[in-house]
Length: 353
Image (cartoon, rainbow, N blue to C red; front, top):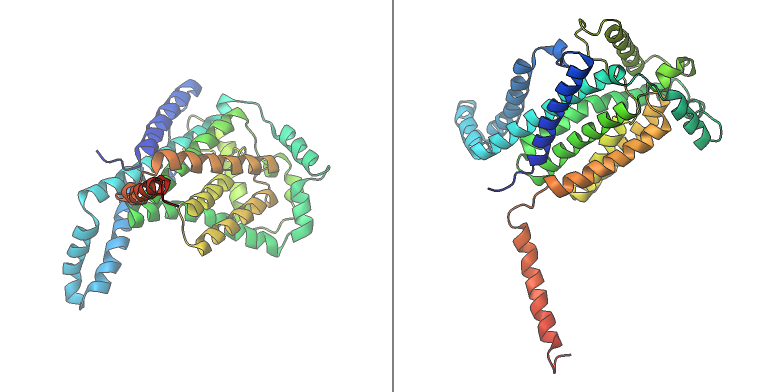
């Protein structure tokens, strides 16, 4: 049977569910839908799949149609052409796998305060100061960039990450479908999540904004600062009554998952040979994310460094286990190699020089 490249991401999804169930049993907490406020998963996930399919099929049908009456027939043609059983199965396995991993990791992240009560913010703050000659990284950025316009600009890019990640997964699985980059990207993101939550349990931290909020009091209010306040309120609600709240707290700083996934995107895009402008845009987005996450106090500099390492490892592992060669790739490389071998053999014969 031909590999699809989604075998590892599916295994990670199953493993993350098992891990979440075991930790939930250990800390005596229920598993929850982390996005339950937007509706139950059994309705929301099929709706996402349906919208993604419609966005893939309908515009193509409209472009091909000679008139509005012809659109229905073209929809049938496009559906038969693009969504055969193998393609549909690939999309469903990928979408369900990454969402299961995401929901499990969110639950595991929310259980960190109940499994490991120690916080290492003081230790990481001292490491940051030691790396920067006694200065606090956020204070240096505030002095350099200011606390007004820069706050709004960096907030825009930081919040955009929240939208772009699920969009990129949908694009990879719906529009690219059976392309090796799809399975590569989906698996790499899952690996980032898995490694991130392991580090959350190993080294629990709140982040500078919650450990030393006075350092960020002069920042202009933005959507990011509002998000920070709402996440702190959710954490307090969960800690006050963990058995009855329907919220999943999401504060755990080490390491930076934003940076990790952005770094993974840069590596995958570069290694996969995407257009130079796309690679450069992703690199710029990575740099902005690194600055923003320290500027707003989400993470320490050590979190950013750890995130970069995570991103590299995730992309490297996913390339080897989740990016199978496309049909013809092996043959295409084998023919020139055999020709070179024959040429080398002829060149080695006496009289050939």
